[in-house]
Length: 220
Length: 248
Image 1 (cartoon, each protein chain N blue to C red):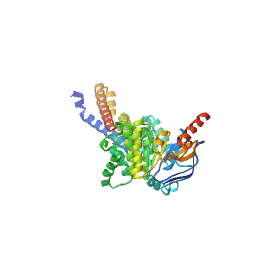
Image 2 (tube, each protein chain N blue to C red):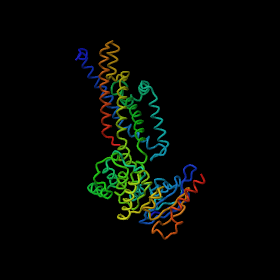
Image 3 (cartoon, chains in turn purple, green):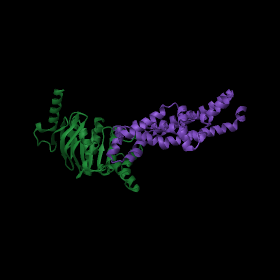
């Protein structure tokens, strides 16, 4: 192993850990909140089974606004909110707040798109069989859209990694922050390159896993 | 079995169904025929309220569907099966799972489900394909799976929306044979919407001719020979199509 990596081993391990925490929380937020929000966007749109102009417009606007922010500005903008929730605006825990919010907005859009790909006829068949809204969602929509949902999550996770790299501005740490502070600001270009290699490996692994899973579960 | 009373349905300004009343008796195979845009599919979709009428009442098996609450309507729909031109199977479920989902929706006890699924698949002759996915099946096989799925809830009525329109002549005959069997051996009342006269001729016992959102005429097709030739539905349909072409 290159000497410089051994020299900074402790810091690197810690940074990787911080990245895992930040991306992990983002993934959780995406699944626990982004998936329901995306589903609601789909169900409430005009002509869909829960058509509701108010809910649709509100969610749609909110998601658009969050996604309009340059992410760095969103982080700064959310500082007061983060303080209320976490008690501080600095550190890895505080960094998870804006990350979770952008994760929800990001994934909910991709969920909505995947659900729009489900043939209308399948939903009609479900309704004609007497399915309730909940049954339509879990027994038909998610089953039919599952590979799209996985691919969307894959794309989202890779974006979350990218978003997490700038969390150094609020002391969030992570590999990206490490690469900038040690590699760029202290002119240790070699160290920066190694960090980039680590990120490339992560992204490759996630993309490969996502594609493989999506292919396996797609029977269409 | 099905009574439509003074149904009307508008899309924006287009009057798809104009004050239509129609009775389908128990045990019939009732065909609905007409040129495209005549409103036949809309009329069928009104029978299980996939489309809501603007005015009028829909009664199926003694229940006035238009007066039911959504929970009751869902319950009522379980005894009204429906199959579609494009089959509308869940592509990510196997043949077995596609039929099973029907029973899951109806809270059939878990232990009884496998037996009932197999019974339905046997009825349509597909038990050997239970592990396949729809993408691995032919069109005729897909439609038979859809029929099995519709039968799982032991419906009293089966609504068929252009069931053979995306099939070739051989598989059409195969699917029609299954439908006829559903009617004869299970006593299910069947309504078939089709623009193909052959479909109507081969299995329907009654036919309703539609044009421009209205019912033009309802006729018995069997026993044949009793009516004069100019009373035969085919004659009417051909006249009708000719008329419409002349107008266009």
